[in-house]
Each structure stands twice: as C-alpha cells, then as structure tokens.
Length: 130
Image (cartoon, rainbow, N blue to C red; front, side, top):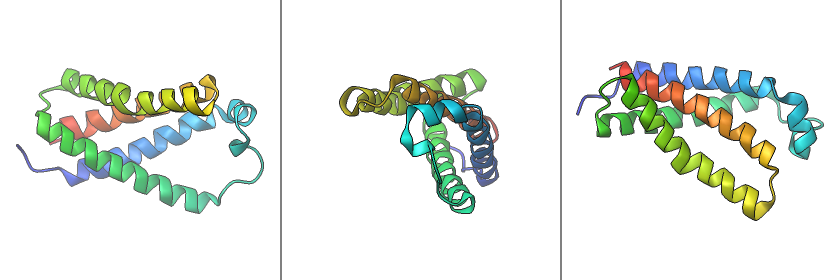
C-alpha cells in the first residue's frame, strides 16, 4: 500500500467542486421546477462554496483511501471502482429518497449524474496520480 498523495486529493476535490458547479448550473431551471429548495434566495455563495469544498475534500480523502486499499492499477480499475461506489452509495440513497420521500425521479437523476461525474473525476485523479 502506497502513501496517500495529498496533492492529488486537493486537485480531485477542486475538480469535483468545479464539475459539480458546472453540472448544476446547466440544470438551474429544471431544478427550480422540481424542488422548492432551488427557488427564491439560497444561502450565501461564499458559505455554499466553503461547504462544498469541504464536502468534496472529504469525498476525495475517502476515495483516495479506497484506491489505496484496492490497489488501483490503471484507469479501468479507477472507472470500475467509481462505478461500484456510485451504484452502491449515492444511487441507492437517491433511490430510497424517490421511493420513501417521494423525491421526483428527475431530481434524483440530476443528483445521480452529479455524483457519477464527481466520483469518476475523483477516482481517476487519486487512483492514477500516486
């Protein structure tokens, strides 16, 4: 098992932050139609940015630990790990919220897409940059 590359973790967290921001920017009108959480005034952009950077940093640290544990050997291993984590966690959580909490399936699909691109980026960066 190798040491964790904290530069890779930092770059992965920033990449996830940027990709996620771009993803949700493209769905602004749809999000507003699907959930009242996306209408009206939201939290301050500065607070939102700090919270999201911290969330993505934690995600990158956890995924970096996983990539070390399973000993990622190349980009295909990284993509497979990202897919397994995506299906096993965010997809299952979002499916539960659609079923139990009546969250619109389209809203859950938007969130699932965000998680997929975020996990792919993070896993590829921390899995390959050692």
